[in-house]
Image 1 (cartoon, helix red, strand yellow):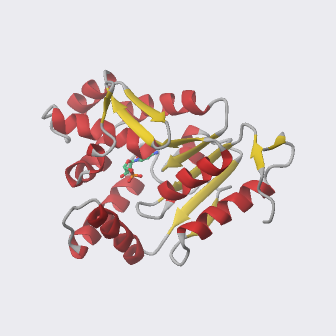
Image 2 (cartoon, helix red, strand yellow):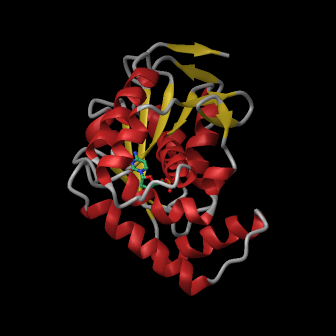
Length: 236
Ligand code: DC
């Protein structure tokens, strides 16, 4: 695609996929390129899981978790980088900690938690001009999204990426532990009763195993470009 000096008005772009498939980084860069809002829905579930740990609520206690989450204020704020606010306090880095990752699949499996998050995500995205990424965007949050993508990648490659990310953040990592964690999260996310991770029938699958981030972004932008028919296109 040669000329990308356009802004697409008001599209809703949904990127779902498995953990470590590259959807977050790609969504962030695509949103930046299009001057769209990036809505990292996983970050919202992570903020809820972080609150559960902070308040010493047992993640297996569905009722207690749902009660706590009901009263949380979770906001995404986009300046240059996406900021995650929990009851007005920034938790952007804290929600990436391994103890949060360990309980987030459990916390996000509860119906009341999902209902609250989905409602807020719909509110944030309703006017378009958004790239939402998560597990259930194309199936539940915005089943009528203009562009629906589903990211996959080989398990070992995903584990390598996650290890690399954590090492960059100064965390200690062990490949085998990470492999077990990601496998377990894949299983929990795709087998839970309420809106499990599932490819929407009309989503386009992108296998990122052998793609660089630049290639992933390029691919998404070219799909978006193909789908833009009938939408207002404004030259920058
Ligand atoms: O994308 P991530 O790893 O930050 O997501 C954290 C967890 O949140 C993931 O294990 C599953 C859950 N999640 C979800 O259930 N639905 C979404 N739309 C996004 C994330």
